[in-house]
Length: 241
Image (tube, rainbow, N blue to C red; front, top):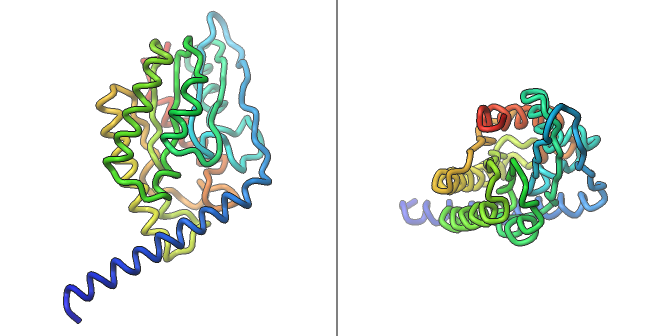
């Protein structure tokens, strides 16, 4: 077999795997339509002037498949901020299932309150599933972060990068490498965009253990969310007081 023929076969297999991955995700999304949305907004107790935390993003940020809103990213991060600062934390989430980076910029950023102290962005998987190029993701992420800076000019902005779903147990084994490569490409673009915008980068990439996933084997479960919330709190550090 010549090198050219071998390369062609690899490209064909990759294309087929990518289509199967997209089909698998669509099937998950259709099945997920019956999963009730969670209401994350809450005022967590503390002393003094409240911190205002707003979360925007996709289904992971929205808490898809979690048992309740207390297990979701918004409240988990909010509780860590309240515990560390002693202040009340006003938690709001605008995240919705299926959102891409462009969707978040168009549909969620305009609804962020101008007095937000912290804006947490968690998006990228739906861009990865669609096979978006690194350049396209970076441009979309830079535009999103610029819009956040205009809408909430005093906020500390944290970007949670796209997780590496190569180990997602809900995906067929043959498809995981394709999705994993796409996720890593998106995460790299997000890191570059966040650095350019001066946003706090929170890495959600790297190997994820099976226990980090929820019942569908694709979205993060309570343990995975807790790990991500710890990373967000650590990354924000002294920026929030």
